[in-house]
Length: 282
Ligand code: OAD
Image (tube, rainbow, N blue to C red; front, side, top):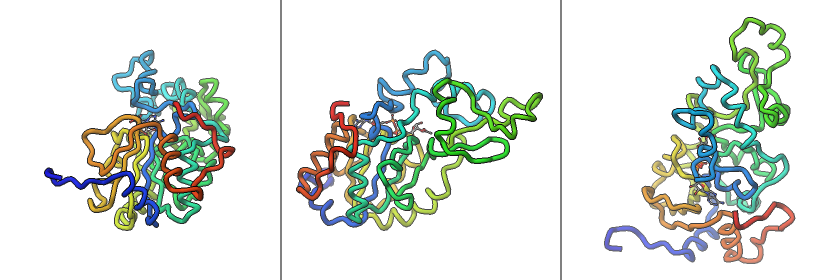
């Protein structure tokens, strides 16, 4: 075009998807909203449900300094985003299909719901950039637990504590023996796996899909800026991201768009319906 932007149509995208052997897919909270888990920054998102906490910034619920001083801030609202233990969305099933067809280079997810696990995404194909509810650790002795072990505490808005540390806590600091889900809080570093993979993946990918994220949180927000511009990049999102540069933006619900993509790809891309909870309207 006159402004130097290439024209990239849906049919070119479908063609590239057919030929691609190294899809890099960056996902965010929007791919799980159809399962009833709120995202963060939409009108109905988590950050708009926290006014009763009177925080200067709602992101403080995921702030490591706040957590060590007042773990109850996180635990009073964590139940609102507690993931289901056996469900995944059509979009998750779509990522699984890319994996089964040996076309998935990596899924960089910002999601902490660990639903990629239930969708069968291989750990070697998955970078949980912000950790997940899948495991939890004691802040004091670093013992690690299966995440669901503290789900009942979360449902009851209680602070879970490590039984071996708890014995000695009478006059100890407030955070002594507190168990925290292995979510990367603001102020904590991302998992090493992220930094290990991203440099090579940025060079190796041949198609980039960004799905269900506002791209507001670094360093994930900048992944696409470090991928050569000739690599096609496609956004699938409910809301546009006008400040970001994509070759193609498919606006709508991610499950509905994944379904549309699969129908254009042909019968061998049909996703069995029993695999996921489908609600294409949310
Ligand atoms: P956001 O809430 O910032 O953005 C979610 C995006 O998904 C929005 O742009 C919505 O328009 C879009 N969306 C919602 N439902 C959708 C649907 N059904 N189909 C398609 N798009 C949909 O969430 P993230 O970008 O994931 O950090 O947020 C990034 C990080 O910020 C999170 O990982 C979280 C938060 O602080 C931690 O949990 C540590």
